[in-house]
Image 1 (cartoon, rainbow, N blue to C red):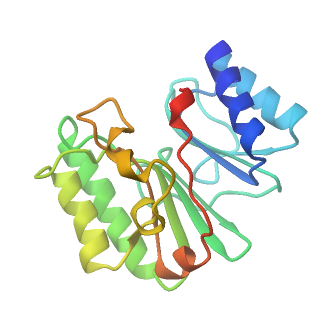
Image 2: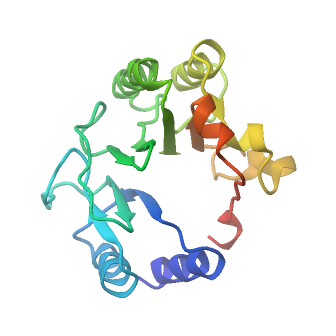
Amino acid sequence: MLHGKKILEKIFDKAHPEIIVLSEFDVHSPAGAYVIIYLCSEKGYYLVYPNECENISKKCTSIVLMFIKREIVSKKSSGLLLKWNEILYNDYRIIGVHIPDSVYEKDRAINYWEDVLIHYEKCKDEKVVYIGDMNVYTDGTPAKEKLNKLIEEKGAKDAWIEKKGTNYDIEKRYTFRYKTRIDYAIMSQTALENLNYIENMQEFF
């Protein structure tokens, strides 16, 4: 709980976001319960479960959760039901993702990436944002190939690269795995055009 509290305090020291997306979230753990109470009761956020859910089974210990400054219901998930949290917010379509590791869960990862590719093809003319843990860190893996296809063939944009975010020169250090990124913000062109700034605050984790 102390680690979670520290992260939240650091975030609010720097920004007051309208939307917070958290991956690998266990709503039934003590730390998860603390975060929910802190954000909803003290900071005025609304909790948004994935896949139009109103509650989450105790068996589900790793989901993508959103906290939003407006009461809203998520859309039906295209990928793994609780690891894909999609909302419409103003004129943006925002999808919090947690894609399985294609090295250890190849079939589940490939299926998820196919869902992303199909979804992007359908929504690419909108302001669409996929953000979260994509577990893409090694060239030659199925996940990296799918990400490359999304960017090179479908025209999606890697916001960190396009906007040269903070610590751009060392962007490959921001994960514990092979000194490459696993967390991304992938956007359509129209969404990228409205992005003013991107910052990685992982130095305090």
